[in-house]
Every structure is written in structure tokens, then in C-alpha cells.
Length: 178
Ligand code: ATP
Ligand code: MG
Image (tube, rainbow, N blue to C red; front, side, top):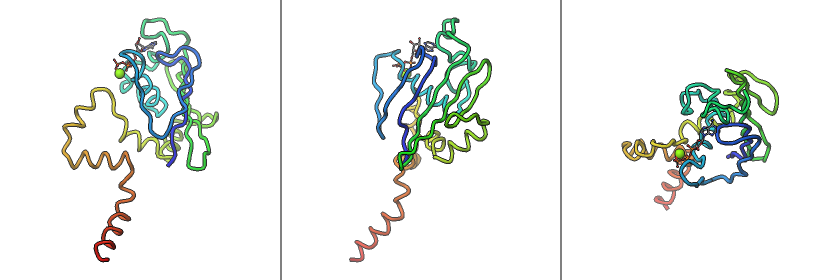
């Protein structure tokens, strides 16, 4: 299973100039005081995964540029690049930039359409995983209130344990027969 190695940020939300977040491990925990930017990390990831402004706690994309929240954006562009590593340690860089009112998408520095970008993300499993796994602030309660079967399904998806379910059942049956 591949993993997110690093995020490269430029003038996005609370980060001014170029910043590197990472390197990440396969499992990570982000801690910090209130207002220190924990949710902004999730926003940066969601942005790079092609989310719309409405899901990123802003009205317009350009509100995501550093300083825009106080009406003083440092530039008219911002950028978030996700470095994804596959099992063979091959790196793919998914980068989304805000250019004026719209977005530009690049894979390994090559300009691509949004459709191609999303297709490539899906291919490495990022979007499918993210849609199921990203838990935003305030969503914890809704997870706690889920039907137990639904919650189990969600955790099976996150841990990818479902992939091993058939093998597990087979081995269990074999053990029972022995
Ligand atoms: P909490 O623990 O309260 O959830 P948090 O660590 O999740 O806090 P965030 O919501 O990620 O904090 O970050 C909030 C900070 O980001 C605020 O200080 C806010 O001023 C800053 N911020 C948000 N948008 C921008 C922007 N466009 N430019 C600069 N700073 C911004
Ligand atoms: Mg937060």
C-alpha cells in the first residue's frame, strides 16, 4: 500500500511562502494548540485532492491564499503538492495551484485537466481512500452515532482489512476442520 510522503505548500492559508510538511509515516498524528493550523493541513490535503471551495471552509478559492482571510492576499496564487510514494518507492507529485479565480492541475510537473488529475488520483487509490477516511472537525460525533455495522464497514475500509476477509475466513475454516 502506498502512502503520502510529504506536502509542499506555497502561500496556502496560514503558510506564507514555501513550506514543507512531512515527511509523513504511514500513520500520523497532528497535534497543536487551537488555531495553530491542524485543520489547515486537512484543508491543504483536500485542496490537493480537488475539493471545491465550499468544502474547504471558504466561499471562493482565492480566500485560501495566505492573507486573504484579512483581505490582504500576499499574491494571487497559492499551491499545494502531495508527494505520493507507491510500494516500490516511486514518487508521484500531484499539484494543484490557484491561478486567479481558477485552478491548475499538474502531475509530476506536467499540466493536466481536472478529469485526468482525478483519474490518476483514483488509480493510486487516493481519492477513494480519502473520501472514506478524512474525518473533519465536527464529524467525530456523527461517526460515534453511526449504526455499529456502518461504523465497522468504515473502519474496515480505512484499515483495508476487508481485503483479507476472504483469506481470514478460509484459514479460520481450515483451523476449525483440523
Ligand atoms: P482548532 O484546534 O481550534 O481546531 P486548528 O489547529 O485546527 O484549531 P486551523 O483552523 O487549522 O487551526 O487554523 C486557523 C488559523 O489559520 C487561524 O489562525 C487563521 O488566522 C489562519 N488562517 C486561515 N486562513 C488563512 C489565510 N487565508 N491566510 C492566513 N492565515 C489563515
Ligand atoms: Mg481545527
